[in-house]
Amino acid sequence: MRLNVLLRAAATLVLGVTGTLLLGTPAHAAPSFQLPFPCGQTWSGNSSGSSAHVSWEIDFNRGSTPTADLGDTVVAAAAGTVEVSAHQGEVNGYGNLIVINHGGGYYTYYAHLDARAVSAGQAVLRGQAIGALGNTSRTGNNISPHLHYEVRYPDRSQSHIIKSVFNGSTFPYNVGSVTSNNCATSYDPAAECGAGFQMTDSVKLGSAGTVNLLWKGSTSQNCVITLKMASVGTPTATSAFLEPQGASRTTDSGSFSYFAGPVIRTAPNCVKWGGSAGGTSYTSPFEHC
Image (tube, rainbow, N blue to C red; front, side):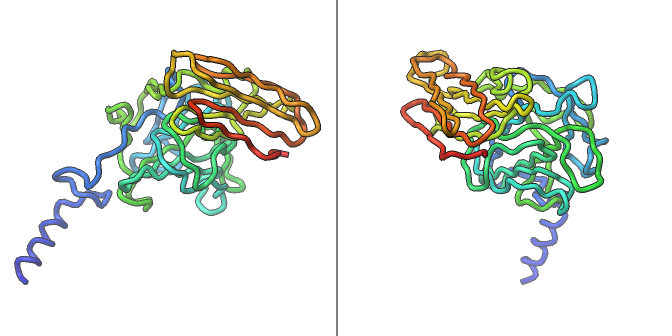
């Protein structure tokens, strides 16, 4: 009995502030996390001046003005399942929040989003577009647009935020710039659709790619683009379509190396949208009315 007490005391001495053992290796290997932005983009991160003021979380910006990043695409840092997709401003100040469960006790948080493009329970690929950067928070909390990003382990307790690692390298706390190697696809859906479009919805097509719906409010236009994430650079059957309710369908299909689309239509009301890659297809109901 006394030996058990001593062992428990020794274990307590090596517990870090995150609640995980400082000695040895984690119970589960961490996913291969990448920067939560499209391939090739460089973003500046700040932990010491972050909005939540908790160790190891990071606020990201890249624009030269306070609102330059508003609407920029945010992507999944690793594959997983969406555990939370909701506006939680009045609960915790995170505003539009997405939490992805990567398995093994690892969770990533994406807060203050202007728009969420995935739903709770949905499986996502690393590099899949999941939302648009914003400044949503609780009522009266006026913040500049930025992405608040966290990794938590071994559970979702706020006291278990751990240092972020991107492409195998720990973020250079407290302030640093990182270039994204999140390159399952080299394309940003918003950039391909054009200025003013931002993510509205995204669905993975097995492991072959994603089909993405974007919206441009100033012109009441929708855009659909299917991005390949397998056989990239090799022509394979890929498609994207968009059908405004009450109008004909527009489809782009063929043997493409990187993506199908973008298909852009004026659609102030409901739309049906979808696409295919790698033999997997998706067709939505009429939605986003």
